[in-house]
Image (cartoon, rainbow, N blue to C red; front, side):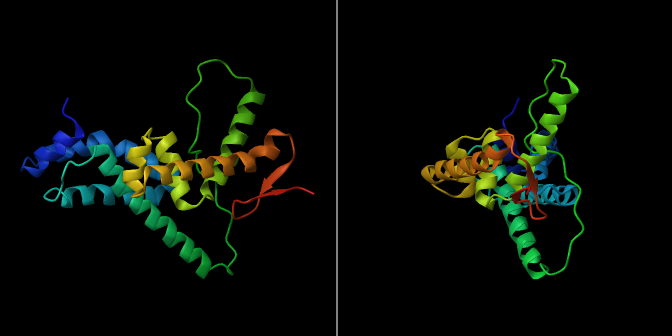
Length: 208
C-alpha cells in the first residue's frame, strides 16, 4: 500500500485520481481529532472540509520534509487553534449575554472498548469521569489541549507534535507535563470522593 507521502507526491505529479484515496484514508482521523478538539459537530465538518481543500491547493508546493500524517495534522491543528481563538474572542465580546447551557458532546478521552461485562455502577462512574475530563480538557490553553490530543489520541511522537505546533521538542514536553499536571490536580477532589461540580465555563467548583 502506498504511503501518504507517496500518494501526495503522485498527486503533485499530476495524478488527480489519488486525491480521493488521500481523503478516504485520512478523513476519519482528521474528523475524530477535530471533533474532540472543538466539541462541535458542525464546525468539525466544516474544518475537515477545509483541511482537504488546503491539501488540494497545496499540491504544487508540497515538499515531503515530514511524514504526510504530521503535515496533515499541522494543517488541521492550526485551523482548530484559529477556531478556538475566534470562539474565545466571541465569548469575550458577548460575555454579558447569558448563554443557554450546551448539551455535552461525546467524550474525547473515551477508553478503548472493554469486552468484559461491566456492572451499571462501573459504567456510570466511567461515564461521569469521561464527562468531567471532557470539560477540564476543554478549558486547557489551546496548545496544551492540542498537544494532549495529538499525543493520546493520534499517537504522534514528541518530534511530530513539535512539528505540528511549530515548537521545540522540549517545549512540547513542557506543554504535555503542564497539561497532565493540571488535569491531575483538578481531578484530585473527584478521586478523593469529594463533591465537585462544573460551572458554566467548565471550571470546577466545590459544592458547599
